[in-house]
Image 1 (cartoon, rainbow, N blue to C red):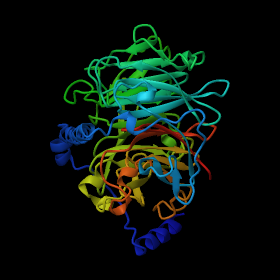
Image 2: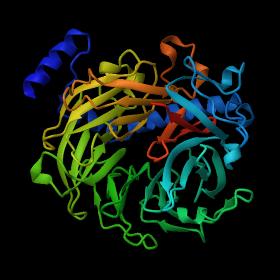
Image 3: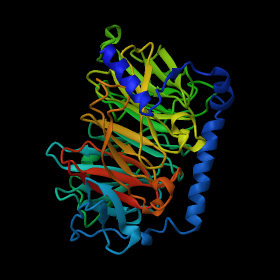
Image 4: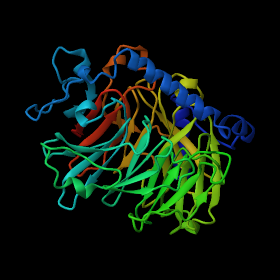
Length: 478
């Protein structure tokens, strides 16, 4: 394995794929830019300015993006295009091996504001598939029919004020919903309430009658929500302030009884956590087998925690990497054998750092065989200019939301035998943002297009939630 890896590394370097590398954290720079929140504030300001300018131009007007009807059939990807409305450039989408099945605008999903964010899915005991779609003023709920149609069922309004940032994850039959809005807390909604809703009479659910609520966050806001269903807890991450108490780190929420959520503690040791994946460890580092691990994506580092004891958590390692600008999110390749993970950086393409200096999105590959000394072994570069945002791994494939470049699906199966990334291939894509198709590189490094996706339905349908338009249902053909 070692000799094969060296040979692959030499070959990759010779072919122009420079070897990536892990680096010690730059704690001086970290204290100046990240611990203070300067970088996060900068990112949020750029996004808000971008969205406000586009709103002023009428780009969020849902009449620009008509929803499909139940009578409209799927549109196959033919010769690299899905012509949803033939002759209409706004409704013609670049694609490869992914077909279009449905679209609903944010307005037709009950959203007073056409602002999309996170999304997640849930499958009922009898196999029905449902989605929760984050919006600026709440969460929309819909069923994905066997034919791949989005059937709107209702919405849960915001708990406090409007916020573009709304993050959603599932715990059993519940959706756990957080927001950057102050005093929002965490909404816990039972998706079984949707099972008897008549689509002809969509329901606006009540924050006083239809949810459970966790109000133990310092200011009520959180940047993201993480769930470890096996261990029966959620985690609020990025819950400011950064300088006191839990320091916007990992705030644990016990969900054994979702009607009475409580917090057993937090992990403040590395300060602000932007996103995380928290799972029971199973992998080559036998010392940690059976422990509860959180892989934290902490602005300038990959930080790995032992969180088995929620009252006394431990940092196992903190590692940065060449090109780090804003460590955003990542996912392990296999939760049952945690040897590798992939990581995305949300600002390296913008600041033109490291492997992303040309504006093409970079997926960083990490060997985590030794949790105490992770190794950044290589990377994959996307073929279309964009910024990578969220990615999830399902059956050896990475499903990526790459803002203006849309949904990208990568085959990661080569990584265990060649962790340089030279063997990673794009299997298919669906570009939901045709407005930048004529730009150099086929796209732009701007915060437009898709925010999130959900790839775990047995049917193979993938939900893609977008900032401007609404929600798409697509399906790979490979």
